[in-house]
Amino acid sequence: MGSLGVPELIIIFVVALIVFGPKKLPELGKSLGKGLAEFRRASNELKSTIEEEVRAIEAEPPARYSSEPEPESKPEPESKPDAKTTSETNLDAH
Image (cartoon, rainbow, N blue to C red; front, top):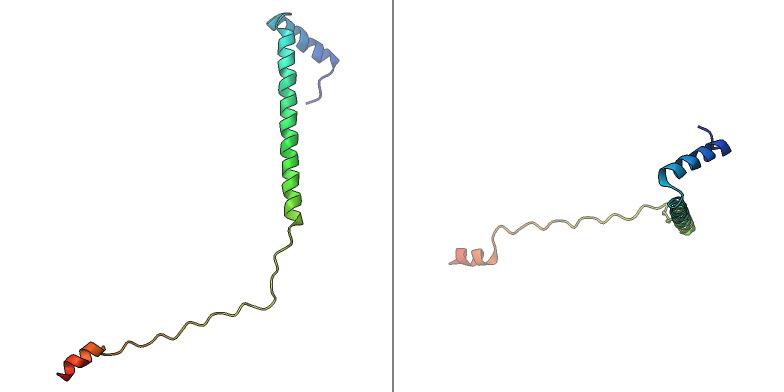
């Protein structure tokens, strides 16, 4: 699909003039221009925001990774429960 040339633009203008009339056409052109300007402004803002985020990510220092592994914590040996608690021992003594 190619770009629009002068003959195509003239045809579009004539059709718009017939459909909308000479009084409404300047209003529509103004609204279309404002809409395109707002779209361009929003797309430029989005582009600059993305570029800023990329620069911020690139500027962050890389995370340091140590070549030595972290010391693993050894689990504490589980204490064996006493066969009898002190109160049970006292009961047996009686």
